[in-house]
Length: 330
Ligand code: DGY
Figure 1: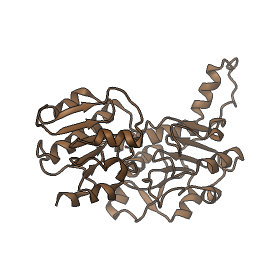
Figure 2: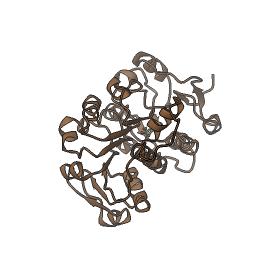
Figure 3: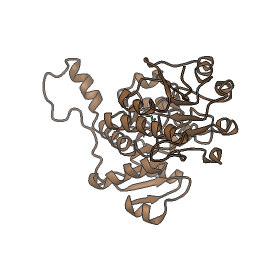
């Protein structure tokens, strides 16, 4: 036993990056990816000084109850709806996320999903693999162009802005809705126009969701919102499951009240609503918008930087660079 502080890493990541902790910490890294129950998490966190966790680790009062030494929970994700920030702050535990390092990857992926849905790529590939391609027909597999169609963005943080900037090359006008409009210079930089939510729903040909999941944004897109959208519109969600009412979406798609959807996140993931699985006008992917080599490494490095910084090491010593509750430092 050493007297170094202890850090627990809840999932396999990148050993070379985690190794930066070893001079300062006794490191326990899980060798296998799995979902821990609340009591397992509580037992894992007890006796640790720091933890690097992922989105499926839900951490609140029950999980930190025995973690009397815990000083920081570094989340491997920009979204942190898995952390009870109030409970962590009340216990004096810092929390951090991986803001910014994934903006461009997630923006790329949102575009990939949107283009895939517009051009029916996944459905066409399934058809080809099933051996149905016996002749090429001129009017088969017609999708829709994105050029000239309106791109709507709900949630205009840094990922939303990265998505908007790409629209220039695709010839799409951009409208957005956010809790508050962007400062003028930022709005100009991404050539986007602020509208209210109802106008966004009514005017978007493609609507991309990039807002965080909070009690206020749960089911921000449900039956009433879907009813306001054009029947030719497509919905893309790279934010969080729960923002969309998946059952209402499946119904709208089945009844052709919405032309298509592309979803990377789901209300009960990894379970996907069966109504979505049976539809051909939906592109589905398993929550991988930030899953590029470069970005997942950068996310891991940032989580490590946060832990090191809290314990006074590294370039950010004393000030974890993406701390979510800086009040605990006081
Ligand atoms: C995030 O960062 O919140 C993503 O959803 C995880 O990849």
